[in-house]
Length: 455
Ligand code: FES
Image 1 (cartoon, rainbow, N blue to C red):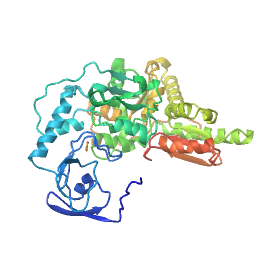
Image 2 (cartoon, rainbow, N blue to C red; image 1 turned 90 degrees about the vertical axis):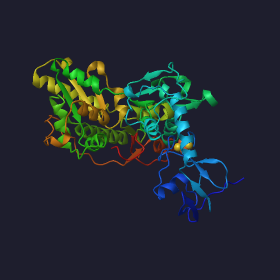
Image 3 (cartoon, protein in one colour; image 1 turned 30 degrees about the vertical axis):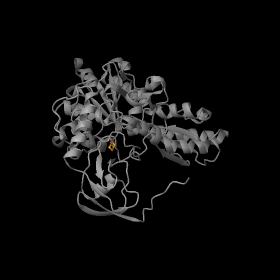
Image 4 (cartoon, rainbow, N blue to C red; image 1 turned 180 degrees about the horizontal axis):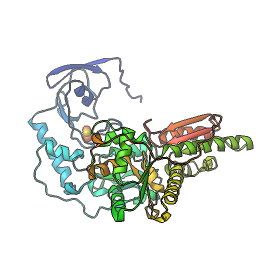
């Protein structure tokens, strides 16, 4: 039986809270309401993900149906009269939030998402100041830490966003659902640690989690404490392009690369090097490797990635293409090691005493950082927390320059035919083409973020 496909060229007339609106067929109630500037509360809904209709916070009344409908999961229809606000709906939504809170640890003060938590915001909207259903949250649910992501399953509201980000957006399947009804839960395969499954540490799951159930492993306090201990020598590598991510995290006026360098120095770093030098040197080496392969008749394309996650992706899902992986060493680690060497020599101090921190756009870089070797990889979010914790006001900072680092400029290579893919869904279709011998690129670079905002 064929499913009816809405025609976006057909207009649907309806009223929402007494206001008329015409929207294309296939528009969800939530979107039609937005057109009238009516904000219906949501929790499981996320603009980048498919409709799921799990939490029911967004219920509205639709005449002619008699029942409540989830605004995020139902399309509008001709002539419908929708009500989004009344006493009955407020009571229902409030009860739903109270029920979710009854199964949620009440330790907001100590939660990483405090003040930035969608559940906390809803509790505030509905004026929830007590727990009428008590608290039955399972204190035994584990908090699993890895070098990249932390899962605190006691806080999970089972909205399914992380599952969809992992399965549908990134096609990895490291996180899944299990059981039904009250036993329903979000878990990894066989409840293994993420590191022991196919996870590629792209962090998309943490990016869509509405609460503090999955988040990036935060080492900002650890690094600040390490620097403060005996005024330990610390050096940093940071890319100028991280300034825009830092600006988003700090949400406090324009952050330029020069101000970011100033802030990093104020945090106690003795030297601040330009991490782009590492990327340029690595690209040049990879070009050389491609040409070497062309010369020797080895298989193409050469496959490289922005992080260890890409290597895990190929090994887990395309083991037949392992031979295509670039042999160029992890540029972040190599550069961090060179900077450390250079600084230790210049300052005449033992290499083992120097702390090196790379500020990176991708959380998967944390996977190869070894804090035991005083080698850290921190995200823009962690840098923002260090800046806030240290009371640095970005607006007041001068523009500064990177410290000079003696690095051979990369040799000018004749360009090779390169294809850059964003995210693992796109990577999967390119790898399928490579496996079928239908990819004519000489070099395929995989960036783990599905949006083209990482480079
Ligand atoms: Fe609509 Fe969750 S936001 S059901």
